[in-house]
Image (cartoon, rainbow, N blue to C red; front, side, top):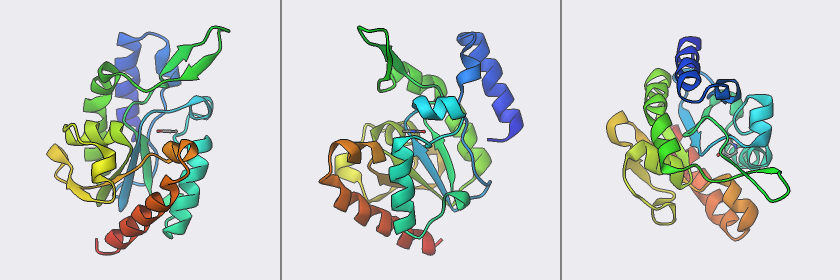
Length: 191
Ligand code: URA
């Protein structure tokens, strides 16, 4: 994310959630990247390091990008929600939770500005949250994964992928995810 957009988002979050602006995890990567990957929200590692997809889901992502012959450096990576959604357990430990509708809606205009700024050749969403945030439609990843959709108001093609974290919990999705990533790589060659 360019510095002026980062600053504007920081100021906005400082206004609505004072103090939380320091925990924002911005998107990173080259402008006009062929591919812009959009995940759900940062986790603990991402928040500590201030970078998207550096935790366990990021390792899975790197593995599949390598399979598709894509490198992280040539891709722009971001999230639909740019603050880690947490819940507090009985022992007082923080853990991740899915972002709420309100959190997704709060960040949506910023995501749209980010997409406009990056102007990628294609968007790939990871899981339901960014799929719905970008298209504005209540689609289901189980039904549209591996397909190229119209990314709503962005006017860009959108390729729907499962979220890499879902592979941690459901190993049987690995083959499907791998096929989808290869299909995405083929598609990118035509851009
Ligand atoms: N890390 C991220 O940055 N985003 C996700 O969606 C998951 C892990």
